[in-house]
Structures are given as structure tokens and as C-alpha cells.
Amino acid sequence: MAVALFWVGSAIPSPEVSNCSGFLDSIRVLDTTKFGNSRDRSSNFKVGEKTGRKQKWKSCSINTDLGYLGGSSNGSKLPVISSMVASHAGEMAVSSSEQMVYNVVIKQAALVKKELKSRGDLDVKPDVVLPGTLSLLTEAYDRCGEVCAEYAKTFYLGTLLMTPERRRAIWAIYVWCRRTDELVDGPNASHITPAALGRWEARLEDLFEGRPFDMMDAALADTVAKFPVDIQPFKDMIEGMRMDLSKSRYQNFDELYLYCYYVAGTVGLMSVPIMGIAPESQASTESVYNAALALGIANQLTNILRDVGEDARRGRVYLPQDELAQAGLSDDDVFAAKVTDKWRNFMKNQIKRARMFFDEAEKGVPELSAASRWPVSASLMLYRQILDEIEANDYNNFTKRAYVSKAKKIVTLPFAYAKSFISPSPVPSPFAKT
Image (cartoon, rainbow, N blue to C red; front, top):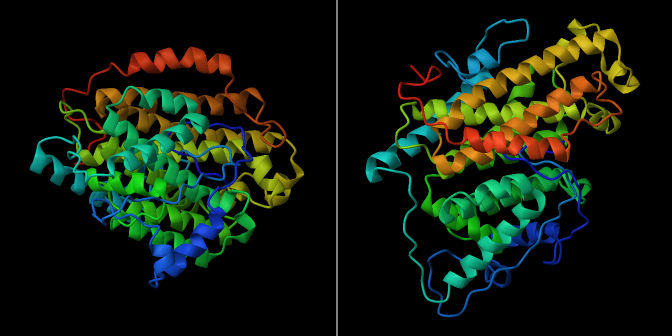
């Protein structure tokens, strides 16, 4: 199940393969570097560290045969997501998953607030570049931009409105998320084991400590050194990949919600420090993070509803088992791929919940920095239209893939651009944490 990144990706797979002796090989090499293998560690580059010679990274491309990469929750007094995680019947409950995610939200928001107090804004730290390293970093960011331009065309256009620093940082995060997703959804997915994901996580920790393994890692290492980005959402995304290796059923929405947070809501947490919050915004930092999480959850739920048939053919059902049973349905009905009145009613409720998340996410867009609103607004509007297409297909998401046509995208983008001029609310946001 490809994750739904915070932005809109391309649906066209690519046969591109790694040019650094294989993406899996790079993970195996990483494992040896953790134990001091000098041959492999020499390929690493510590950001800002002088070594006395010109540095080179392993210049890896990425295997990109998947379609979308894009794509919260609160506990007691968790105003945004507690209303969203309520069942479609309107029951309200605070689950352990909601509380866990909310704790992460609070931590991320605290980092940003600390940065705001110390510097007065979220502008990036100035570059401190040693001789011979600037061109390498520029090359690394440029490569990330090329990947984003090829596989997330709509979002890439939006990033061009951002400041160069924010634009490059978002590219770096996009590429890391895509590479992570491909570990379990790419052409080498059958060879990925929990141990391999463990090595990928160790590589992430090295990256955050300023020891990137290759060129794309170096771009992200530079990004996390400049912005108040925490490692936890990145680790949580890897945890979502682990779930995909061992779990193909979700007993209730609480379980599914946690999965959606891991693989998509995390992207919102990664992105808010980069997108920036408008200086004039009166919304709480937590509420902005919650809106970003809501968009990630909404995007992932939309992907799940769009891909029911595709996932079923792989033996996977990303739908709450208890809600299927309440609707008089089972996995057998999903595998039978027949659109019945029971299925239509079930899908109506699932779509309703996804739209509720989109509604909450939309409230946070005006609170972002002006240059960041258009790509986020475009992502939201375009992904939301996939739900409309499912309805237009008479809820047949078994054999018909819902997608937004190029003509509709062209019509939508100007509206998203116009919305980017909406200023933050002059009074505290209604979904702000109290």
C-alpha cells in the first residue's frame, strides 16, 4: 500500500533502478558502516566537517515504481482529531492511538515554539559552508528537485513559489519519504525484512547526526540541521513500513488510524517546520500541526478507498473489519468485487469520514506562510476530488480506478492559487488547542 504523501504524486510507475550498485546493497553496506567498516564509512560525508579532501557521496537514484507518496489525533481536550476519529456513527472516544499521536504532536509543536522564541521566526539558519562542500550540497538538492519534478509535478510547481531554502528542504523530505516507501512497495519489496528496515532506521539516525550515507541523505541532513525538524516522525514512518510487512487486516478504525498516521500523517509533522507558519497567524502551533496531520490522514484514507480492488488482489484489506461486519459485509465480499447496496452504504460512510478530515485540514491552510499555501491547497483540493470520482463510478473501486483528469486539475489549480491569498484568521482558530 503506497503511502499518501502530503503532496500529490505521479500515478505513472517508472522502471528506474538504483545506479549505486542497488538500493538494497546500499542498505547492506550501511549495516557494516555501523560497525566501523572503513571502506564503506569513507563514502559518508559529515555536514560541516572538514576532511582535507574533496568529498564525494554515493550518487543514488531511487527505484520509483509506485504511484502515490503523499499523505491525527488528540486525546482529552484534543479538539481537532478527537472529532475526526469518532466513528461514522458519531461516537466519540479517545483511544490509545490518538493519545500516542497527540503526544508526538505536542513534542513537534514545542520544538517550533522554542525556535520562534529564540529567533523570532522560522527562517532558516544561515549556511556555514566549508570550502569544497557548497557545490556538493547544491548538487544534492538539485537531484532531489529533479525527483520531485518528475514524480510530484503539481506539488513541484507549488514549491517554486517558496523561498529557495524552504523549497530545497521540502524536496529533500519528499525524496526520503519516497525512498522509505519503496522499501516495502518498490521492485525489491519482496527482499525487504524487518532487519533491513532496522538498518534503514540506523542510517536515518546517522543522517540526523550529520553523517549522511549518500547524496540524497546529505540534502536531508543539511535540512534537519537548519530547521526545527525532529527525528520521531521519520522513525514513525519506518514503523508504518514494518506494519506493512506483517499486517494486512485492521480490526477497527483505531488500528487503521494509527497506520495512516505512521505512513502519511507523519509527513505533515515533517513538513510544518519547512512550510512555516504565517507571522500574523493567531492559531496555536498545535492546531497547525493538527491540521497538517488531518490532511495526511485524509489523503491516506482516500488512497485506501481508491485502491480497494488493487489491494484486494494482493490479499490486503485496509478497511475496518468491525465496520465491514456492521454493514453486513466481510473480506469475501471485498474479494468478490461486487458493488451492492450494502457496499454503497458502507462506502458512503467511509467517504464521509475522509471528507471530515479534509474539512479540518482546510482550516489550517491559511495559517501557513503565504508561499506555502498554494501547493498544500492544491494537494488538498485534488485529493478530495478522488472521493468525488469514486462516487461518480457508483462506488465501484474494485475494477475502476478513480482519478482526477488532467482537465479537472487544470481547472482546480487556479482556485487553489486564489485560496493561497487568504490571510490567517485575525482571531484564534476555532480548532486551536485550549
